[in-house]
Length: 164
Image (cartoon, rainbow, N blue to C red):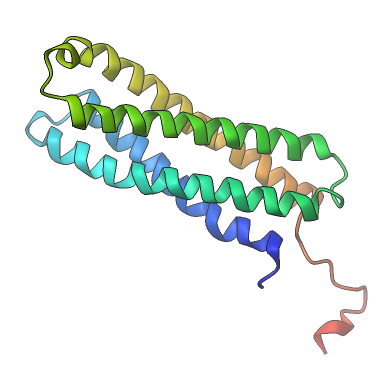
């Protein structure tokens, strides 16, 4: 259970869930779907976004650790390289959205911020949509590694003698 390469799947599912739900909630807030509850919805999205970003970077780190172990075992290492490259991209993308959201909280009362607020809201909606799609693609590549190439999967012996 405590093999280094198993830390990645232990951590990776938290940012997937947090960032996907944060994207949905923050898009809902940015599009003002529920005007009476926009501030509450926005806060709820931020409470998912910020820890999701931290956990995304932890997942990237544990993925790098797992790569050092399973990289020698997979048949097609290009899938592993694409998985890693797109995971970095997604982590950077959501870090950028978190920084923009944090800047919005900090400078929301400044006149110049109010002038660019609508443009930033549109950009953030596009970033959240792209980030959610990217999470799906990175997850697809991760699934290909596990289910097609048995990355980090223990292969029992033919007679399963280790379970006796």
